[in-house]
Image 1 (cartoon, rainbow, N blue to C red):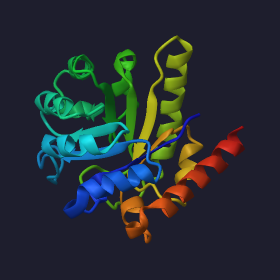
Image 2: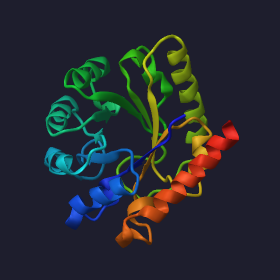
Image 3: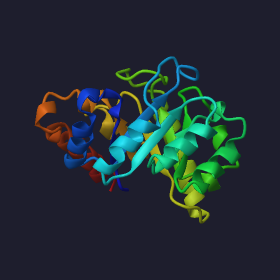
Length: 233
């Protein structure tokens, strides 16, 4: 299984955001993750499409946009035009989940659904064929720096079974991503549930070697993931 690290710029230094995304890319990031909050669906306000457009020329790796907004469709189109590669949203925030997934794909992006800690996996029923990514929230959305919710581990195992069954039936590969409280000391256990893509914000951008380019913490994440892969082999 390929493991991917997706630093969330929610915890970056916005006074030098261009430098920040370039540094985490150079340190080995696989994806840049954007947490978009609207102060309606979640109690916080973060960034818009202009930020995505500004960093797009600075990175070669995919930009993964997590929309914590209501309604979804108009902003999905704006982020697609701003250079997003992946756009995911919360099903509770869309009146027509299937239509929104189709819209994102028609815009040339990969499409994902985001499930909050208490959101059931039943939201995945009937739309697996339109999904490129399933994002499990391991904190309640709205703020960075929260503690990981352990109950999401069982949910991740069940989601992995659904993905594997879908693939066995001839469906396209679907990433299983997790976001919230991912640290060096728990990433291996999370990986063992079947998660393949890991969003980390404060654990990366708040690392002690921040001024040096984040190399140390990214290497520590990779080491833990390699250990998990070896145990699974």
